[in-house]
Length: 123
Image (cartoon, one colour):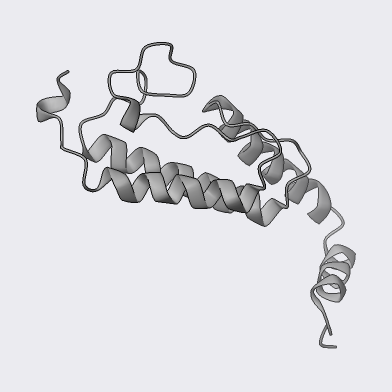
């Protein structure tokens, strides 16, 4: 039996694994918690695939910050006085669609590539 759509596939998989929904819900909750820990606003209404894409985008941004000598403990959304504002993840705007926010995070990551590197992470 070949499922005709994604919904049919999920229904078939759910029948084969009765814990699938709980496992998926737990994974989504973990991704949302990881984003919230970084100061990113998530509403709980986001598509699970979009949440995963957002976490990927945030991690790419963080990797770019670190490669330029930034300190993620100082240069984050919760910081009152970051060392370098370029190294702070853009804040999600109220009512901003998640895909639009992902695009802004990706743009900020791209801009970091031309930002001067900090020698040895010093201020």
